[in-house]
Length: 82
Image (cartoon, rainbow, N blue to C red; front, side):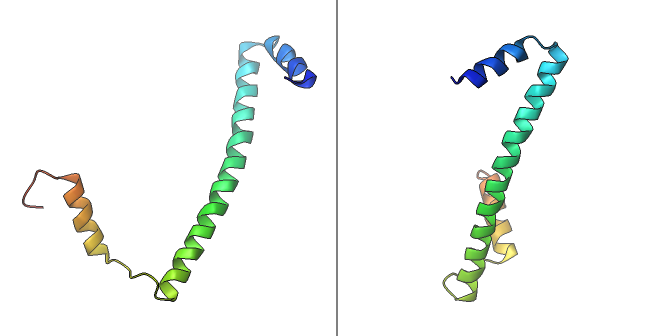
């Protein structure tokens, strides 16, 4: 561990319980915001790639009805009426 980290950890251990929870919450939010940005960018690339594939007839779409039928079959595998 770096000296800066050790100093921060030492100071954090001297905080009240409420202050430590606030600090933990802040750190988690900072971490989540980075992850959310990365995930959002990755989804944006995926969406654009899927749109391109449809526009260039590389893939064929599936109707809503067909998707729902398959979802019902997967949800109720032991029911013959679905």
